Length: 352
Picture 1 (tube, rainbow, N blue to C red):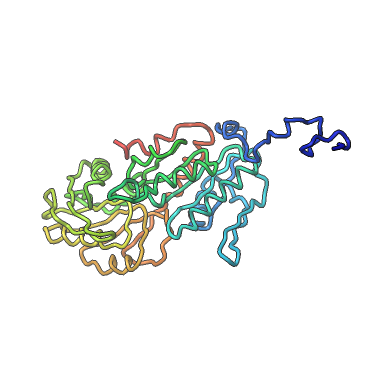
Picture 2 (tube, rainbow, N blue to C red):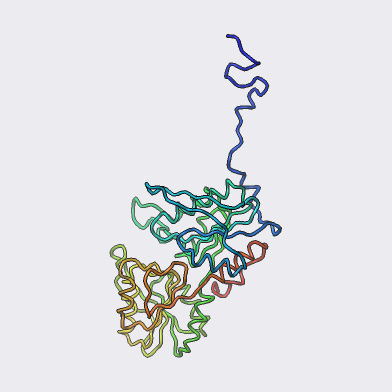
C-alpha cells in the first residue's frame, strides 16, 4: 500500500514514530505541587455547604473569597468552574461534608478543577468531616466509608486536609497526605469560663470521648471527670447503662464531638440530672441536628445551655443553643500553613 507524505501504516507521521504512543497526562504531577511556597498567592474558595464560615475565614485573613461558579444541571449533576486564575496559587477550599452526599462530590469537583487549572497546592479545609463515624467494620459486610472518603480526596488531587474534632483521632491514619487536626476546645473553654460555674465536673457521653472530656476538665481547672456508659442496640438509638463518677450536687459540662438526632445527648443529660447534678451545660463541635434534634434539646428541662460551633450551619435556631465561631482558628491555620509554620500551638493544650 502506498503511503502519502511519509505517513506510517498506523496513520501517524513517520517522523514521530513510537514517540506518539506516549502521552502526557492532563493531570499535573502531584510531586511538583507538593510543597507550599510563601511567595505564591493565597486564595480561599467556598463550596455551597457552609459559605458563612468560609466568608468569616476569608475576612479573618483579610481577603475576599475567590470567585467560583457551582451549578446543577436539570438531572442533578454538579458542575464547577473557577472564574479567576488559580495557576500557581496556594488554594484553600472550604467545604463541610454533611448530608446530602452532594457536598462531598462538590468538594471533589472543586479539587479536581483546581488541579487541572495548575494550582500550586490544594488544601481541603473541612470544618466537618462527614462519614467519620463509619471508621471500622463493626459488623460483617459493611464499608469503611471514612477510609474511602480519605482515598477520594487524595486521588482527586488534595495535597493537604485541615479539619476539626474528628469523631476519632485515629482517622488521621487513613490519609496518605498531611492532615492538620484542630480542636474547638480552644474557643469553647473560653465561653464556659464566662459562665463562672464552680464545683464543676466534665462528663463524656460515651467511653470514646473520655480523652476529650479529660482535656476539657484539665483546662477548666482540673475538674472532676464523669463517664456515661451506654450501648447502641441500633443506629441512632442509645441506652444509658451506668454513670461512672459522682455527680451529686455538681455543675456539669457534657462534651461531645457531634449531636445527630439528639436522643443520646438528651438521655445522658436526663440521666445525670436524675443522679443529682445541678446546672448542666453542653458543648458540641458539630451540630448535625437531624430530624427533630433541636426540638428534643429545647424540650429537655435538665439542660440549661448548649454551645455549638459553626462548622455546620444551624437549620433551626433555639434560645438554648448558642453558636461559637471557630473561623478564626481555621484562618490562623491557613496562614501558618501557607508560611510553612507550625500550627501545633493552636491545639497543643487540647491534646494534653
